[in-house]
Amino acid sequence: MLAVPVSLRFIVTIDGPAGTGKSTVAHWLAKRLGLEFLDTGAMYRAAALSALERGIDPADGECVAQLVRELDLAFDWTSDPPELFADGRPVGERIRTPEVTRAVSLVASNPTVRAEMVRAQRGIASRHPRLVTEGRDQGSVVFPDADVRIYLDARPEVRARRRVEQLSLKGIVTNEAEVLAQILERDRIDSTRRDGPLVCPRGADVVDTSDLEVGAVIDRLAELVRARAGDALAASASSRGVRGADGGAAAP
Ligand code: DC
Image (tube, rainbow, N blue to C red; front, side, top):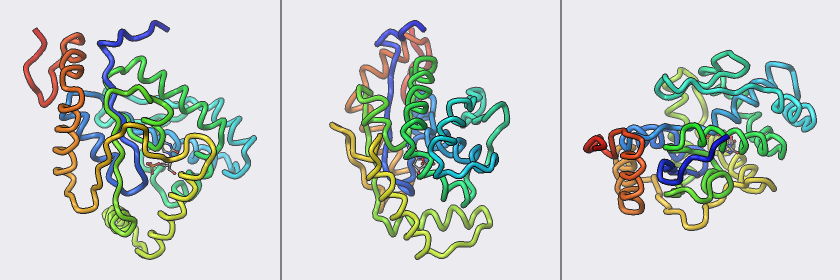
């Protein structure tokens, strides 16, 4: 595959633990800046869902690895946010169930799964080089040379409360103390695994979202991207002939 000229590429990575609002913020930041949005957590969740649907034990490293080698994951980039398909079937909300959430940390700690996902995500970036991508290892492992690297954080109690609210909107009633325990356990697994552990990437800007509304976080990140790499963003937009950041002037 041809390498994308550097001037066309503009990548913002957003990493951080569960419940910091990464997906929502990354999606809206991408829209604000005229970039595409990649939810890499959805890819790991789709792998976990596929394992569960085939009756594979998420702890069975060999079987999960084989499954992921053969799994066809593809986004439909015409929908907003891009819709994920696994072996031709839309995964939809099936990747957000408590069962998948319980299984996914284990699946995501499988080194073969991680290697396949990293390869797939770099492939996506070569076809969609103007990207806000969010996950746990985007700025540390997958795109360490990203134009802007952001690490979102929030206090665990705040993250648990947000998760409870999200689930209750879907009609799922949960206990906040249990959700907090699950979040802390997920943090532990995500940050202690050998491959691609959750870390604050080198040179990343850290934003604590505990006391900020989503809109304020998006404003903060948009400012940060402009301050760090506004010229590169504008150059990338104009070389693609697309509208620039904040719906600014179209390329000449
Ligand atoms: O962000 P999320 O809750 O949808 O992520 C689901 C799981 O996938 C979570 O346990 C962490 C893992 N993950 C990962 O290990 N690396 C990524 N780049 C994205 C997610």
